[in-house]
Image 1 (tube, helix red, strand yellow):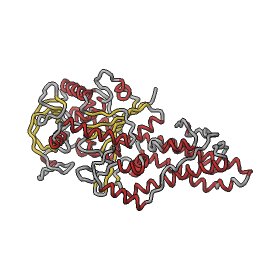
Image 2 (cartoon, one colour; image 1 turned 90 degrees about the vertical axis):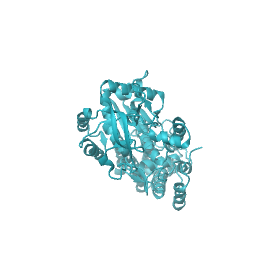
Image 3 (cartoon, rainbow, N blue to C red; image 1 turned 180 degrees about the vertical axis):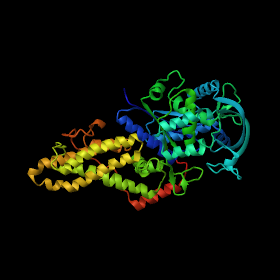
Image 4 (cartoon, rainbow, N blue to C red; image 1 turned 45 degrees about the vertical axis):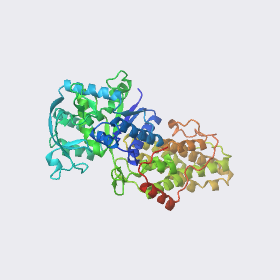
Length: 533
């Protein structure tokens, strides 16, 4: 049976142009998906847009366009950014697509028939920005949203509600039997102690005060409220309740398939409380993991269009290449923690990791193989000493750690292991001193082993880095004379024997730190609506 893996980003809210913060989450998911495919997993990677709701309707009215025209225009910006970032998604779901809208209506009807949804009246405080209702206690005397701090509005309207209490015990039992369901664990404690234990109120799942949404078939004056609409994208995109449901059967219903949602902390409650409950209503399995990633912030807080502190990815890509941007996003902030984008750290990562470490190892090794062996990679001879044995063992150990950490979604740590292997190989050069071995004919077998090991470290590291370095890894393979790289060859020592070195340009150009920091600062203070041509 083939290994199956389904990974999703949140579906983003198209209220403005995407920025580097959006690119962060999607790029991490892309790296995970590419890594799984490389290792032989049948993989489906989904991203998309959540296009309904009162906020979209108001934004469209302010611009003098229809809501559909508004989201269509913003959607093109997401498509352009994902193309520029090299995102390899298998599908892009938009909640305004007929395939989604028709299925959501069927889902709502199924829940009505099961009496998991009932009609009542809502009276309370509502935040348009967060698409959330709050109690009098939660908004306080100043009537501010507890999540975003914006003023809330008093709402009184007829609405449908989802019976949360019916599924609370089932949800808690799932938490207990699946300790990795919510990662990091602190996010689970937050859900239990803040929302579930105090008493979970039934969830409002329809609205009548605006029209931009999916109509309830049984009561057309109601539109289905954003979270029931939005969350179901993860199964509507796979074909749930549609004529062709093969992807749904393969990636959701097959118990051997691993399902991972990657989300931001601001939508944790909806994904780890309400989404599992909705799936309970439908009699469907729950995801294996909901991974709550941290935020990529600026020095003055969360990257946000409304705050005017969001940096576009385009000028970074145009100046430094997409591989450098992708590497920075993966390596700088441990996946799951908050981090801050700074020009200084960006330049440091490029110079230290990509130029001094990876690029330097490739350049030195290629030059020495050309000089000592006419450009032909020599035989991987038996280890001549403990240093050779250490390199062989480290290659194997790095592969194991790389797989283990990636499978646990410790993405940043996985790639740190690869960089540690490269660093060790650079040190290995100094310890073995090939230039000295080349002077002694009797040391030729040892020299062959050294150069073969260095070439293989580059091959193994480039394979493991290829989910991030989607262009530069191929350049490294070309230098090594590899035309058909295979992950299975990471620990197949000697597979490069006889390959001809094709030395080209350096992989990454060293950056003038002072100059480039100034350039990035200009990007951060320049126009905010930069869009690729």
